[in-house]
Image 1 (cartoon, rainbow, N blue to C red):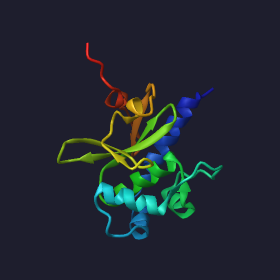
Image 2: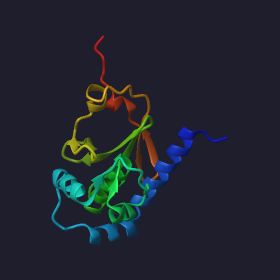
Image 3: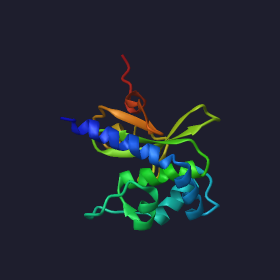
Amino acid sequence: MVSLDRKVITKYQAISKTIANPRLISKLQKLIPEEPHTLEELLNWLHTALKWSKEDITRHNNPVDILSYGKGRCGEFSILFTAVCLAKGYRARIVLDMSDHVWTEVWSDKENRWIHVDPSEKRIDHLYMYEREWKKNLKEIYAFENGNKENVTNRYKIKLKK
């Protein structure tokens, strides 16, 4: 029997492959305006195209379907934002906190590191917000890029001084 965790990981590996598909990226490039370029601008655009919903909604994993549906939760926000970043030429990946949240990381050549972006919260580079503000006890966090999985738990955990 396959564990629930393994099913979720497999799901996000598949999603990360789907959003990296050149045909999908090309389709998204036609659906999103030319203008938003910075991460802040892309987040603002995302929040006009997609509304947060706590209702019982149909969940989507395809960015085009998410955009058409127009509402979602952290998963939809992160999938669409990551795909839009890819369509704008950024290197981006989906990040999954195995307990219950999803966000995005965007690679910065200038800083030579991954930048944390929480699309549903419109927050950039607030690595420790989950422990500090949400009071979460983070256990396992994975980043997914084109089917590849990387454990990034330590990046998001506050390091205690000894």
